[in-house]
Image 1 (cartoon, rainbow, N blue to C red):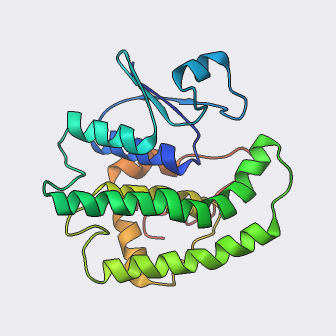
Image 2 (cartoon, rainbow, N blue to C red):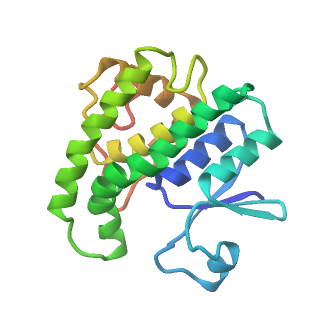
Length: 221
């Protein structure tokens, strides 16, 4: 059985889950308390991070590397363009969300609200949350700029860039930190992603003691 060691509200794990589901690859989801690493987990990934994907005898880590491996091994349905310029743009946007967006927004909002709670690291830092709440507006504006010119974030077809952005935003939506009314074009894009069959398992995730808002699993908001 293929296994994905994950944390439900990790955007990096969710990106891999979306890719697996889009390509109709069945996996067993195993929640991993990476903040309390066991010897077995560290053998699977000495970096002590999730996600970790085990397929047959291969054990893989790092979300972008996993997703591109899956794309190479199972290219249908495609999540990367064939041309070099298109692949560059997808990788650029994946890096944008996994690096810049993550550092400025996800880590400042989701991690303060949720990760500190589940890992016992204390109370949220209000300065970090204020910074994240300010920066997400800039990122939503940038997404709107892209989507005003394209059908999807990286071009005319849905790609791994869309899954990467949706993974981060879906986690933040769980804690009501996304202003979907800021840009109709971004909200419409998210509805398209959210309505895909691959998104269904994400919408049933729940953190004990922290319920999502009513609109979280509503395909029409």
